[in-house]
Amino acid sequence: MNRAPHADGLAVELRNVGYSLEKRQIVSGVSFKVAPGETLMLLGRSGAGKTTTLKLINRLLETSSGEIFIEGRPQLEWDPIRLRRRIGYVIQDVGLFPHWTVEQNVAMVPRLESWPESRVRQRVREMLELVGLEVAKFAARKPSELSGGQRQRVGVARALAADPPILLMDEPFGALDPVTRAELQREFCELAGRLAKAIIFVTHDLREALLIGTHIGLFAEGRLAGIYEPDEFLHSSDAEARAFVDSLGTEHGRDRSSPKCD
Amino acid sequence: MSFWTFLVHYRAEIFSRTLEHLLLVAAAMLAAVLIGIPVGIALVRRQNLRRWVLGAANVIQTIPSLALFGFLIPVPFMGGIGARTAIIALALYALLPILRNTYTGIAGVDPAVLESARGMGMTPAQILWDVQLPLSIAVILAGVRVAMIICIGVATIAAAIGAGGLGVFIFRGVAMVSNSVILAGAIPAALLAIGVDLILGLVEQKLTP
Image (cartoon, rainbow over all chains, first blue to last red; front, side, top):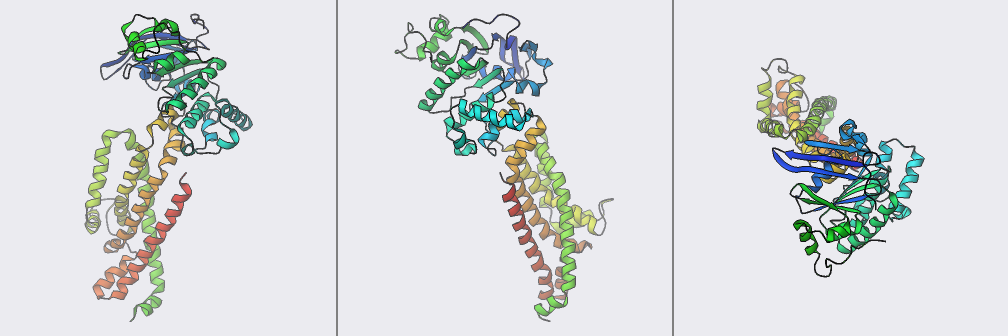
């Protein structure tokens, strides 16, 4: 878990980024860097600007100030379509195409990128196995025939299918039942360790942030209050960080070290 | 003359009037679909125009059909006596259900699906053709079916402005006080409506993902 070196080798860098809507400042002065292999958790209360920041990275929203660099290149120099195909995107409501099968959903970006069909099929098989879904059983199903947990597994497989160096995740496990959520969190944590991607992961759950993240970026009122390593976070004196730590309850005292998946 | 002997006697005219009727409806529906679906799609992106366009289509729908045909006669270029005027009036009637259903269908696509489509790098054209249209085709087709039924019914009035069609029998029957003659227009019109609706139902089934 080494901090990112500056300039080259970075997957995503935000420099003093702000976003305002109808004169209202939603996000301001956000700066961070994420290198391949790192998972930055954006932690904060609802409305703190985490999701907005995430959407600025793949240009679902346009920055009002500051600069974003993707793989060392200014974001605005990228063609937005090309940029998004280099960035996997997973959202809480999954957003699988209901009229497509699991296989078609996972194959989406590779097919948009006109990969040869044999390679697409191969890749879909690999991805489904990677997220723990049996190919023979699930490939031909429609999203409506899946459970919530299975749907989100497909969502993750779809996001990874074109092997993007960057992965954005917006509370991907937030809508799942606690048991399934814990299962997916553990598996994802293990997966993230193997994939060596730059992952930016929005959550409001400190437990999730501690489990999955290599770093935790704490958001409060549209600003990034600080970036911590998980153990550092538990001992931070920042008031908002304390509020999150206290929300864990007594069984997770301050002197406990952060849980890790491996 | 009994109804049956009338039918046999006039079968050639009934057939040609039915064909005339169908052509009026087909031309009007083609225009309504070609205008209604693109405009309905555009309304989803331009919410500020929505009230005005749907409002105008609503107003047109409330004009009694005979009056609409009458209003159009003196209008330069699109008016006058004959088929052209009738087609324009029919298309105007067909427009509302097509517009409204296209708008409703496209606007009803799950926002999460659209967000992931955009986020994963689909172009706006790909989103329209691969996502929005397939997911709303059933609603759009339902609008086309309603428009079709309205069109087939209203097209009987087109005879009043000399556009022909099955309405010719109905107007003639009323003038002659002859039920047989009225039915010679009304029954084929009803059968047409049912038949076309069945066919569109099958198309809808085929196209629904």
